[in-house]
Image 1 (tube, rainbow, N blue to C red):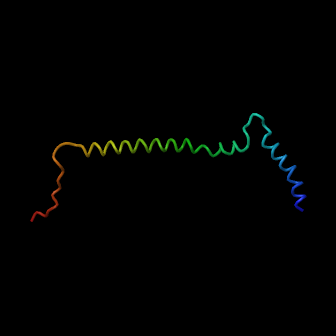
Image 2: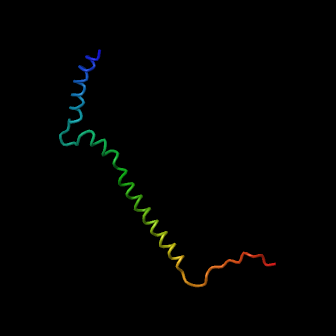
Image 3: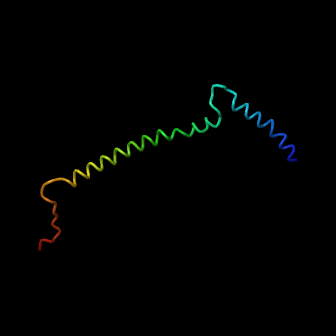
Length: 81
């Protein structure tokens, strides 16, 4: 039984190979599969750029408020009794 499975695997693998290399100008099958899932790189690059700009703006705002001059902010929390 294993002999026949091995014997049948040879033409199946040759057919698969000829199918994957049918177009000589196209990249190999596995390269096409990898490229199909590589679109996330651009999306993540854009997301990281937006995140970096948001963090830089938050740091600038925090620095602006922490280094302001003038009277210190005091909030009277006592009851006026």
